[in-house]
Amino acid sequence: MSKLYAALFVMILGMSPSPVQGQSALELLQSIRQGGSWVRIPVERGEGTLLTPLIPTLGVTLAGCAQVYPGLSGRWDIEVRDPLGDGLIEESVQGGEPVTFNYTTGAQAQLSLKAQWSEARDTTLLLWVGLALPGREQEACEPVYGSGP
Image 1 (cartoon, helix red, strand yellow):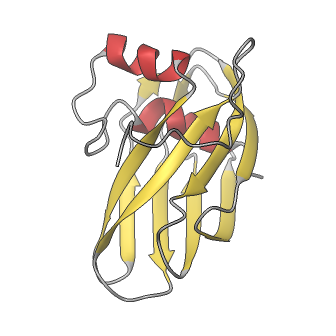
Image 2 (cartoon, rainbow, N blue to C red):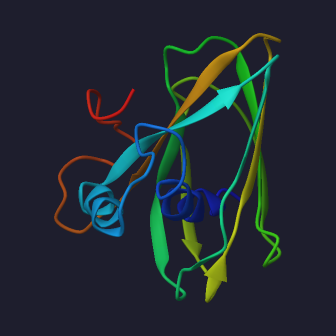
């Protein structure tokens, strides 16, 4: 069920608000080689959404981990849909709870993400999306601090 976080990584990193805003293709590939990045999603009155553009993904298989920044309070209900496939995940997590994934994309992908915070306030959802890479010592579920938020 959590496999769509991988596609979330590939697609959101190229178009999400900072720290990855305006990433070139080279910078996106560098984030992947480094094993992950932080994604920022604006949240207003406890709700945040993000829609990725339609991009070619060429059937790439990705495995890794996603988690909400541990410093954020409350509970986060996160829904990720793949309208080009049958993918749907629904997770309810607190900051720091890892969610692993293993996902093979199609030829193209586009994802929509909805986040509902247990607190009806404004904030920024910080989401670590890490990849398990061969030869990389750091685990995908271990965020790299200082590289994003």
